[in-house]
Amino acid sequence: MGIGIGVLSTLFIYPKDTEFLGIIRYIDGAAQLLYPVLVFGAAQTMIHFYPIVSNSNKHLLFKYGLFTILIMGFFVSSLLISGYFLLDYENYVYLLLALPLTVMLALVELFKRQATNLQKLAVPTFYEKIIPKVALPLVFLLFLSNYLSLFTSIWTYIFSYIFLMVLMGIYVFKNMQFTFDFNFKPLFAEVSRKSYYQYSLYVFAGSFGSFFAFRVDSLMIPEFLSFDAAGIYNIGVTLASSIAIPATGLFALYAPVVSNYIKTNDIAALGMKYRETSKLLFFIGAIFFGSVVVGVESLFELMPNKEKLVQAIPVIYVLGANVLINMATGFNTEIINYSNYFKFNLQAILTLVFVNVGLNLFFLTQTDLGILGVAFASLIAMSIFNIAKTYFIYTKFQILPFDNSFFKLFLLLTVLVLVIYFLPNASNLWFDVCAKTISFGLMAVIFTYQFKLVYSLNEWVDKLLLKFNIGK
Image (cartoon, rainbow, N blue to C red; front, side):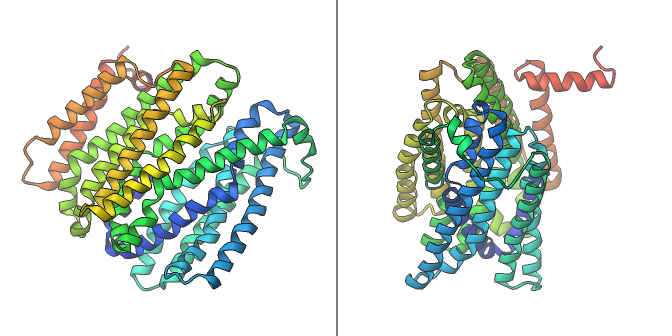
């Protein structure tokens, strides 16, 4: 559903006003930069310590996260509001509008992590992936129809996150016992404050650095190019990131599983799950990305806003490859985060801050590539990051996300994409889009199943065939 809504909105709604889209994404980018400060690592720290604290203290980890957001929220709000009177910056009003969105993102992150610990992740994930994707196109349509002004539209978009936070909060509180006793002495009698704050600080630095390593383009493009360019770039980001929706849910679901494997030192099971998940995610991502590659050019030619959409095609290709690389390397971030080597993520991210910001500055100021250069900067940075993490995990745990069947799967899907992409185009563009994408999807599933390259796929298909009394 998330993919469907995101794709339809990107094709038919967002290109109608890419400047407004750029403004929304600028505010969202500022909120993404600030919300790790409010959380200050408390959400991931909650998962890290959850398996080792007693049942009576597990709820205190969640409460301390709420307490952290309250204190840091007051601190950040005071600084931003003071800055409004001290700084002369044209876009500062958008930073102020990012403040309530920042608070909502922080609370949503905490609720989502607590739902992960409770193994009640399906409903919160559904809320998180659907509500914003429904809200933004609705706000867009109301703004384009002149029912809402610019700032009213922005506030309506922010309210959708307030609604999301309330729904997630209700669901989490319904599935846990919660009292308003904020005595944290029992928690820190079991977990040392030094260990807790040390891990929180590393997670915070990693999250904060991640923005500059991978999301800084949402702020740099408006500053060096325009909000319109940022909107066109975001069309590519939206379509490419839709590929990663299955990975987001799977990574969140496996976070406590990975943490438990590491705490119990069951490296063999961890390695098996690492390889199995990497192949599954690569297969799913390659199906979506391959369908985009073989069909997007003909599809965009059919769209009423094709002038804007066509500009985004090279960006989609580059960022799609970026997402696919991240999916193919599996939950390497989670393995490092929940091990005793969590400091490595921080070191790698801080290094990449300089790499990615430097690459963005280079492409934006020294080349004429524009938003395509920004996409290349992101691809290079993410590739370096994932290679470094994969190598590090191998040196410490002797496990890899790849095996022989992974490379066979990669070769198979690559050949299928190239063969179908270079087939002659049909005279009817709709037929061309449907024929190429459906052919690629079916052939990918059939060949992968026949060669038994993805265990989960064979399991699902066999169950489906058995249900319909086929293949007995």
